[in-house]
Length: 85
Image (tube, rainbow, N blue to C red; front, top):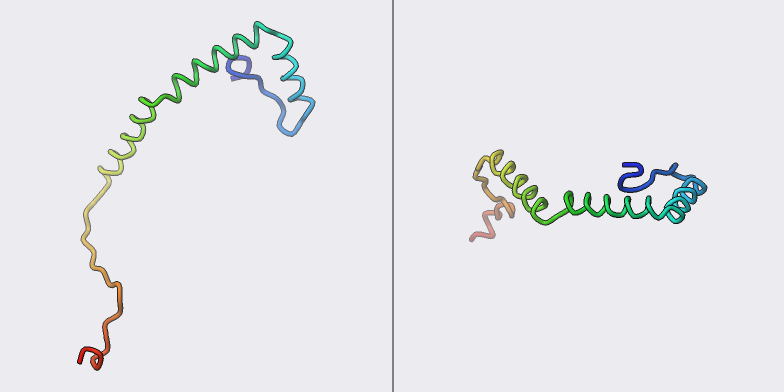
């Protein structure tokens, strides 16, 4: 979010990046606001309660779609008759 949680710059364009960096370094109010907004955004978006709820939702969705189907294991081919003696 341009000028809310950071500044956008043109990818692959070092001058564009440098201009954005110089702008933040020279404008204390902008730097302070961006820092505050970014910290709030990160705290709201990436916190352990939200991560745990999202993980639990994924597990519950997988559980709902799970259908038990017994399988037989054929780990080794059958032995030849002469080996069973």
